[in-house]
Amino acid sequence: MSRLVLCVATRRWHGWFDCVQTWTVTSNLRYRIQVVPDQDVLPAYQELYETTYEPILGFLHDDLEIYEPDWDLRVMAEFDDPTIGMVGFGGARGHGTANLYEVPYHLPNLARQGFMSNMREWYLHGSLEKGNRDVAVLDGFAVFVRRSVLDSWKHYKPQVTKYPTFDMLDIWKVGGFPFGVPVGYFMWCENLCCEVRRQGFRIRLVGVECHHIGGRTSTVHQISDDYQAEHAYFYSANRDVMPYAVKE
Image (cartoon, rainbow, N blue to C red; front, top):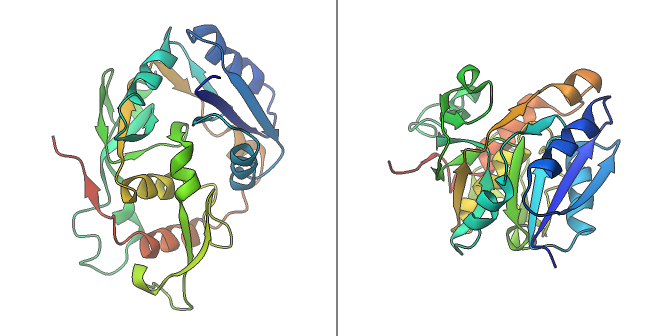
């Protein structure tokens, strides 16, 4: 059995299948590709989690082109280390400003610090990284995560206060992606990165040469998720693992 399944949530924009083909022609091995069309991102990812069985799930955007031969060998080699819980193509050294909870809530303070990638357009987002290294947080355009992390993910629902602390959150469910709370298109990956760190795993950036076209879903399909609410929930629900920065 293959260790990896490639998971795709798509609104079927005209070029999505061409992008997926770039993953297969550049990979060393062949992997099952599971597609969920015409759903919002989190319900689609939950269905992909529930309907697959491989120990590593790769969640790749349908507007991602991969150019590097044998990219899959680089990714899967990282998971040979049992301390690695998540791998991606773009990530940052820091997650949130150092004084995040020492000052009043300010959404920009949740931003990634020191973003790196080997995207063709890397210079628009941060710095170039072709190697492999520890990071604090990944971008959701290409992430690979251990199924065991998702299996063990405990989800919490906040009490009715504006910005509750982590200790004020009640458990909602265990396993899979969160529902019944404001997590969706904007912050699903950041919340997952926090859970990976919470479970004691490391996160790795693999500088695979790629191109993230970007905006195919957000421009073709109207996103209904609440940007402000997702960030406010993230701020309240991850106090135990935020802010965070990897050691150089």
